[in-house]
Image (tube, rainbow, N blue to C red; front, side):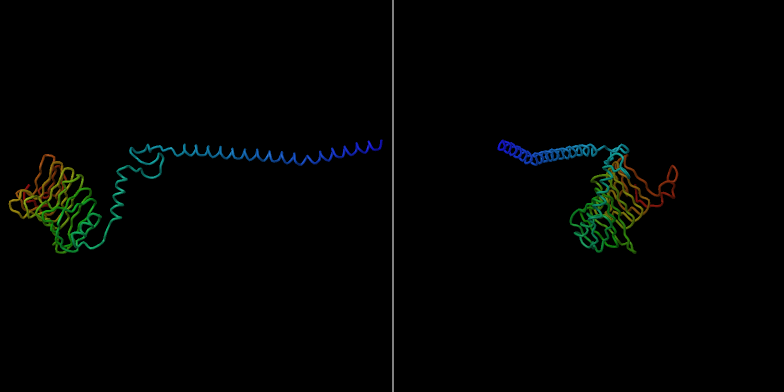
Length: 290
């Protein structure tokens, strides 16, 4: 009887021991399962938030053109002035002129070509003779500075910029001389040539200056002269061109100024204060003939 009781107690002890031994494994398994579920949930949350953020950014960055000014390249509601393609071209042009400027002395044809291509103020530091055309593609102020530029059978062509010619020398001895058009504007249209001082002297049969359609020639001083006695024109204004001669002298030629068509525009002398030009206003400039 006692042996059976001992056996029953031993069996109960062993069963309790086995039960207690199995508890930590169960708890650990549940904790691992819980951690796994939390990890998966966290990854899904991050993925969802990232996708949502990307979609919202895409919607925010959609471009809406400015409605204030037609042709403005900025987004609607921008700060500052509107920017149109024409304004952008102007900015690009100004940047190009500044960035390519050279202050090297202009004493020969190569340095003259480089300086005119760069744009800005160009001052002669010696007499120069051309062996080819020079083209003005940006705004240029050419100071003859008392020296002589001989163009020969070539020309200063103006297309893509405005040209101002002056002579800063005390004796006003600066001169450009040649046998073909000294200044030829027959390229792009919309350009302006201004003569403030100095002399443009033609020695051939063509006009000294040719003003093309859409171009303008302004003369406030200086001399435009044709020395070839039988040359037809000194200044030739083609159809659609404009010439305003408010000072200086135009000498020689059969016609000092020629208007090629009814659409050519010309003002000689001071601009009229009234409906018509007075004799005093007209006498502010000398033209050999029109």
